[in-house]
Amino acid sequence: MRKIVVIGAGSVGMLMASFLAEHFEVTVIVRRKEQEEAIRKHGIIRRNLDGTVTETFVNVTSGYAEIAGDSLVIVAVKYTHLKDVLPQLEKLSMDMPILFVQNGLAHFEEALKLPQKSIGFGSCQFGAQKENDHTVIHRGVGVLKLAVGRGNHEAYQSLLDVKNGLFPVQWVDDAETMLLEKALYNCFINPLTAILQVKNGDLATNGHARKLLEVLYEECMEAFPEQRKLISFQDVIALCEKTASNTSSMLQDRLMNKKTEVDSIVGAVIKKAEQKGKRLPTLKTLYHLVLAIEGEKT
Ligand SMILES: NC(=O)C1=CN([C@@H]2O[C@H](COP(=O)(O)OP(=O)(O)OC[C@H]3O[C@@H](n4cnc5c(N)ncnc54)[C@H](OP(=O)(O)O)[C@@H]3O)[C@@H](O)[C@H]2O)C=CC1
Ligand SMILES: CC(C)(CO)C(=O)C(=O)O
Image (cartoon, rainbow, N blue to C red; front, side, top):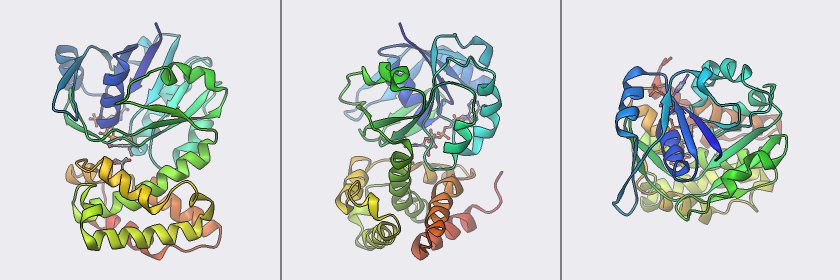
């Protein structure tokens, strides 16, 4: 049986671990003793969209030494915490495939500096919200897209073999295009939800927020015209609707008074546009608003 290790049992880590535990032997790596004890005692509890509850058994540890040699490792910490995890990953076997599921663009080059043969990237279009240290709420079905940064896609084939309509997985060819596509969705949804303190669905139903989404969409598509064929404005509205009840990851950070990923997502997109001589004034305003709201967090 394929062994999967998920590093970071937050919203995305717990949601992925709980779906994958229905098919594989899953181990989650956490950094706090309380969380280790909670997961050891209760497993991971997933609140499904239809109101049902699924309890899944996973192994839990705080040490990397326990990672079995034939595991596939999924890194589900925020970009802000990757700096603590990368030195641990460097010590793992060269044959161990690693998959990064962060939003944004900043992790791409850092991940590719690792020595492992297979480095993959994921783009999560589902909604997930941690309720407590062992419970996660599924806040919207969305595809998990996978692409290889280095190596070949066979290392990730077991994830593609998961056939679950609530956890669809899809292969895409180009990792950088995929990450930019997802980063743009996040530029539309995350800062606005974090500033306005609203759920994703409100961006589609509130006329003023929707107008801002439209302005952001047009501004970004002028800077990245090749993305227009991948993302229509209707796709943006559809993602807000599919994840309507989700508290975006940026708003979750704001509500918990944590440093957001605004730099690795929005800052990175603004920088990429500026390298092409394009300015994104509306997005830049939102970027500074998020930073002003969050102040100096560590
Ligand atoms: N939430 C969502 O709906 C979506 C999020 N994403 C992206 O997925 C990524 C993860 O986000 P999300 O799950 O929301 O974030 P969370 O903050 O909910 O989870 C991150 C987890 O990583 C843990 N962690 C941090 N450092 C370490 C470490 N050194 N070792 C082990 N665990 C560690 C944290 O532990 P602790 O609790 O101890 O701080 C926390 O449980 C982000 O890049 C986000 O943008 C993508 C799509 C949807
Ligand atoms: C898919 C979406 C927009 C879900 O909220 C997300 O990526 C996030 O919250 O960071």
